[in-house]
Length: 158
Image (cartoon, rainbow, N blue to C red; front, side, top):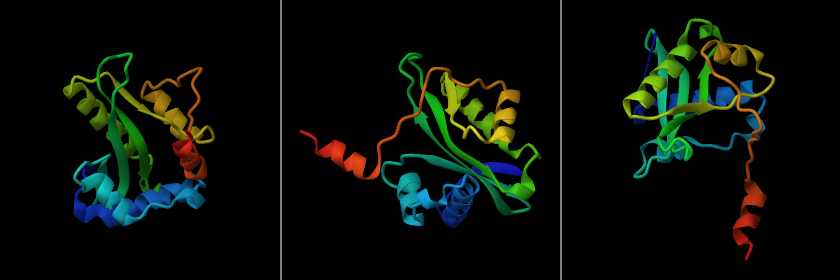
């Protein structure tokens, strides 16, 4: 039971697990990514993200998608965890916490200052696990997103 950096050979598993996450979060209707999208984002000439795979007995059972950020107020780099998903049959064995621990070590080794992510407000088990790790919610902040037609409209404004 261990995490490792994903390779191009893991693309099908990355896709399968992230699609399973979208289904778990009741957001499958928003899942439009393809394996080709992940290949470009993870292994293209300018990778936008990185991924880790959790394996149990040689089988992929978890995925963690993350990327580097620069919180300007700290003046030091950090890591934003976009997604962590462990198949339900393999939860409560420490795999999720192990992913956060590995990335926390990476942040510190790179001289960074933050490890950040968001969580759906209805996901009480995840919130409890994150609080047990010492994570605190950021008060007075609301995530914002522009996508789809609104993104195109914003780009076209003079």
